[in-house]
Image 1 (cartoon, one colour):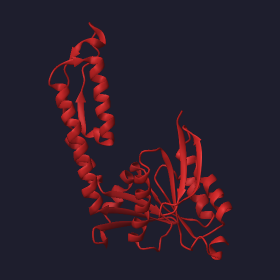
Image 2: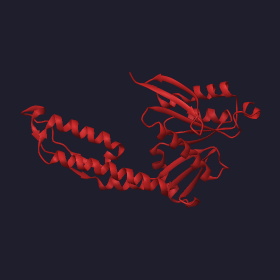
Image 3: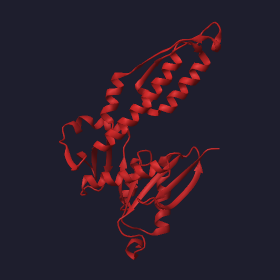
Image 4: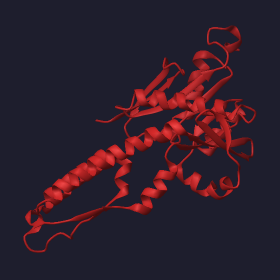
Length: 258
């Protein structure tokens, strides 16, 4: 039976609250309950909530603003596509040695388009490694005909292991043979999808963040968000609905509990 462990931690990784919920719980439904729980347990404080793109909705972000909460959140890939034209007209600003940003003002928020040189190198290396492994597996499968049923299983396993990077390799599979069924030996072909790969390369190491911390240094917003990336990396073997909060006042101080 699958479950979702929803976890709230500090930037240092210390857990402050968690819930175990049914496996079909949508990430976007967990935020409101945790806002109530954290304030009940620890009082109101100047907290910055860091969330991946699957958790916040427009309604919950509006509620967070009404509570006086601050946030830095990731955005779905589709939102970046919609804003590409507007962002292309904005100049890059260097905010860290290997980080540059473009800023786009929105109502009550700022959109921060981040390009991290370190993340570009890391994500590009990971993508190349996954593609190389998948291409090697496909080459071994294509070396000789294999039963249709087995072929589908092995290609499915190769795609699953490659994850999102499997989209860069197009595979042409024959239809299910009419005579002989799933046990019939069949060939297949594959090739690197250059157009999709070029689009993917342009997104590597680039993130679109949104925040209501409109006066903060964009570099700070990026570093806040990196803490979420670090926490998620630590728990990547589990299905977490992850929230991270940055207390601007120490949790032990009386001012943070007011």
